[in-house]
Picture 1 (cartoon, rainbow, N blue to C red):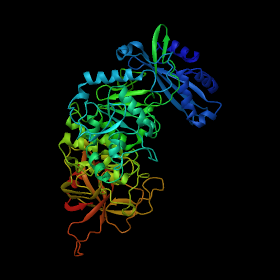
Picture 2 (picture 1 turned 90 degrees about the vertical axis):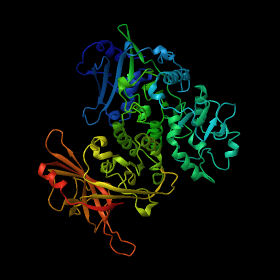
Picture 3 (picture 1 turned 45 degrees about the vertical axis):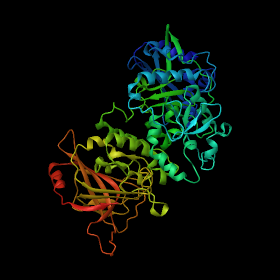
Picture 4 (picture 1 turned 45 degrees about the horizontal axis):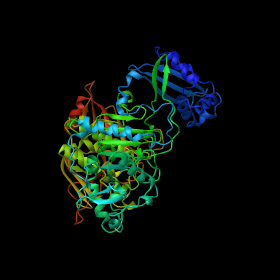
Amino acid sequence: MLCNVCYTILANRVAEKPSSPLDHHRTLAAVEKASAAGCPICLKVLGAVTHTDDLEEDPGTKIRVSMRHPDGTVSITFTVSPPTNVAYAWIEFLILPESYIESLETFGRPLIGPNADTTATGGGGWEELVVAWLRNCLHSHPKCCADHDTGWYPDRLLDLTGNEVRLLITTEEKPKFKEFATLSHCWGPNPNFLQLTSSNLEYFRSNVPYGQLPKTFQDAITAARKIGIFYLWIDSLCIIQSGEGSAADWGKQCSVMADIYFYGTVNLVASGATNPHGGLFIDRGLRKPSVASVRGTDYYVLYSGVLDDIFKSTLSTRAWCLQERILCRRAIHFGREQIFWECNQLGGACEDMPTSLRDILQPRVFQDNPFGLHVPQDEKMNLWDRILDQYTGCNLSFPEKDKFAALYGVASRMGRDLGQEYIAGFFRDSLPWALCWIAYNYRSSSRPKPSQGPYRAPTWSWANIDGRVSPFAGLELGNAMRHQPLTAVLDVSVDYADSKNPGGRLLAGKLRLEGSLIPAFVMDKMATIETDNCPFPRLARGEGTFGEWQTLWFDSPVFEYPETNFCFLPIVMIPDSTSPASTLKGLILAERVNTAPDNKRSREGTYERIGAFSFFNLNRDEMTKVVKLPRMRFTLE
């Protein structure tokens, strides 16, 4: 229950207009005591403080409370700071009147209340709530059910219809039921758990030893059965991981990954586990009341960081998992504190808010799925930009072989919707505009050297660097494509290591372009772009400058081009919406020594990308001059 201080704050202020800040508990010791007694607000406040060492150690730390009333709800914010105001912690709750939440009873259970004795996310009748979510979605969500081929199955599924678990080969034996679930989980740093191999495949067809499976897999089997789904797809048990034919099987299954998650009935997500041994059902503290009665009205106290279970989980940093979340129509997230529901139409819900989270928190994790009749075609490219931004910020254990593969399911599905070929990380019609991506933080990004491993991607592809990428220099690609490009794409050629697996490793990638190459020279090899010790040279245009100022983004902090010719390649001019000026965007290129087989210099130069640029505030004369620059043909590798 709420402590006296929190209750008094709510009772005296919940019906009032926004007020000046007021004090909470006078000491952290008092917060600790109230937290130990079960106050859900103090528990979260204490958690914010203990994760900030400077605050925990400062005896002068104060907790101030402010309130506001957005959209008929009350927002209560706790700001915890020491006297120096150097460090602080901020935490927010939403106080929602019962009338704000519609028909909780329709989901078969109330919010967790004072008498809850659940000590794990798998206890307390969780399946009734999940089944209610699932049935509601299957029967009344057209966005989630459109274009659903109920006759498609992966090549292999775990058959849960009997007492024993076995591996079902769907091309030889058709499943008895149309529904199947999938699993998203972390493999962990040392994946030595039971996996499908060429040597145990035949044995698995009669029995997959349940007792030898890691806890997450066991829990997934239990969860699927409890919600009435009797087929389950788990990557490590349905794709041959080693032995004869494993490479070919991996390539084949990777090419249909979009269909596996798209046609699955629901995706079980192990958000609370860092490896396969963590499980879906995780021990948690007793759920204390999240309901407070103030002046005869029941209020629901919702922590605004409720989605930390998803956002801040280890799984959320895994690149493969992002693809799985985007592709699936429905997902059940098993977090460390509660269970969440996600689908295309409802958005998000959880045990505390079983009807919907979308209207209250607007969580970005619950966004429109890019595959569906409800997403206009002209918006898909902007959605792809946002996906790429998230994906490149995630982690891959083996980027040299998985950089394209871990996103190919999304790319192939979107390419199918757009009617476009997907080439080295881009959709054909988005070139050349999409080439203007930038490294989000060039100081921490890296570009693998040829001597460090097999060829991964051409320099013009975002997959060539490790690090977060901002598509089209932070602007929306779909909007940029409305403007005439200054460079023409004459030809695109890509060689795949496996021609049957376009989502796999590349051997080469070339663009043949026609555009204006503006010579650039190194002003000072030791000069810095900003005030730090960034090792990049400063580049300037050979014949003066365009615009009032320029920004250069390099792809990697390692700059090794001692005797190289540099140039700027204009890609597109973006008019300013509030003035007659424009911004010129393009690539920074370095010339490669390109020789023909007879050792003679090729007529057309060959270049590689080393970064991107923006020239700002070009006037009309400068814009005209750029458009009239001489053009030449060349190759970008």
